[in-house]
Length: 127
Image (cartoon, rainbow, N blue to C red):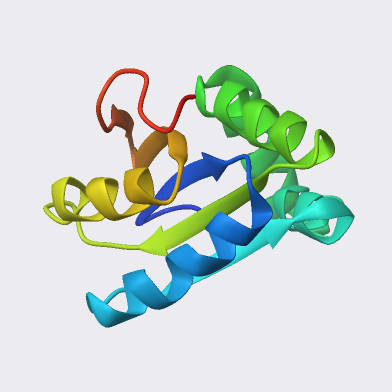
């Protein structure tokens, strides 16, 4: 499973624009990963993990709102959109969001260890 802890994630509908976001993020000093298609969807799944760790993670996700975010990301990938995941510190989200928005980023979240927050301008990346 793709660990989203300590990242900002955004859905970008246009795959080419999502690809163009990576060098822009890199130039700003951020490490980013592009998830797309079935391979991207596989990164969001926990089916490859085994044992008690996998069970605990599944329970945490099942009872938390994070599962709704993961479902939304998965649905976007299934519909042909891309997801960009940016490694960032807690204070970096306000700097990362505009870069993602410039490349069509929408539905952005800052995923912390124990929390997640919606970021970016309302309606960002739309239209």
